[in-house]
Image (cartoon, rainbow, N blue to C red; front, side):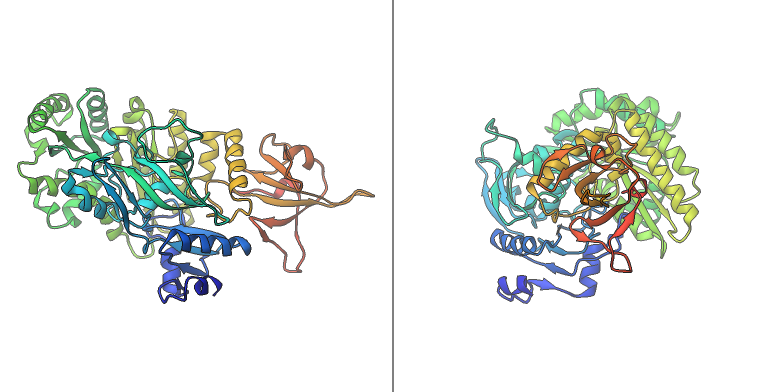
Length: 549
């Protein structure tokens, strides 16, 4: 009520509607959901209103969770500790467009498709290509990419500066507007990909790119997923300036034939692994690139059927229809999901030389589950996705899918890859982040988090940035000892490096050193929330029993 009053009692400022809360707390795109929901959804219109929200929540130590379009898949906007959800859909203004400087300033609720429609007459566009529902704020928070990343990179490559409201309501601008600077820390990159755990992004200054003179697309089918991935690797190393290189497996192609849009079903697709290729540049340059690409790919297509394997767009309408087949993939899968089933969609990325190997191994393992599974990939930059559907009421299916995903993550790390090419971490990949970055790097991230957000109220529970407050029972004349511990997997005293502590006076140290022994610990606080047992007493746990996932 206090926030509603401070926002002028606007009728569209705050919602307590249960359906609205559910929409903002649960995703059908993802298995990574939490049971709790926010108590309210707040809709700010300006940076000043976001500042008001942050100051009130900071005063009450209330969690705050940013919300963009709700299209992320790793539980990035879930609310495991309740609190307030801040939806930026009303902050959808283009603040400034400077075509001569090839940049634009936008609020976080601007949809990227709408942005490109606005600037296209100046011959410019924002070249990121995620879900068509995505908004700029969410794209910044997850460092998204999409199908154009092969040529244009990821979101971090296009953000010049950010206006950020910190958890206590302070407003900062990370840098000024020139294309390059070497002044101070790169704070812009600190907030890109931070998933809203450090503050609210309320304005974004983006670079824009010239729209290519011409584009064209092709779809090429292959007898096996290995052939397709191998051909993709050779195309990547060929030096041809492709705009995008996408992979869809046999399952996905069958779904398009059966459930695709009318435009997509104009084509009778081969139900085998298929590469979708986007060419861009000058018209003459594209003709040359198509010829070179054809020669590289042809040996990997089905012998005797090479001519049938290629679908080249002859018109702009055919170009749109062919590319729509790739862009509709996730929506089509969600549309055929059986009632009561869940879909686990996740991604990894590996060095290009290992791409064919990991795609083939992952496809083989997923296919052995006897469940729906499909492989889709932005293979042009070594990134691919696996989607599996299962019945969550069956523990055997749930465990099998989880094991398969875990194996894929481990396989990617063995190949010096990453557990998240573009989905970020959220709550779905926290354990994997520790495996990828190591305890020391995670500890540094937590120290940054604690300085910027000492109350731990900004999107808590994400990125493995949890803390707990422990209290050891005093012995003899010794008073109880209290320490805030930042835990990765276990607080066991025989697990060196697994926990570190910050004393009540703010001093840092190795939590293991202060927590050895056999005495009971009282878990008195988790992310600022006091935890008590049914007898209204602090929960008591043995040191080795306290494990966080």
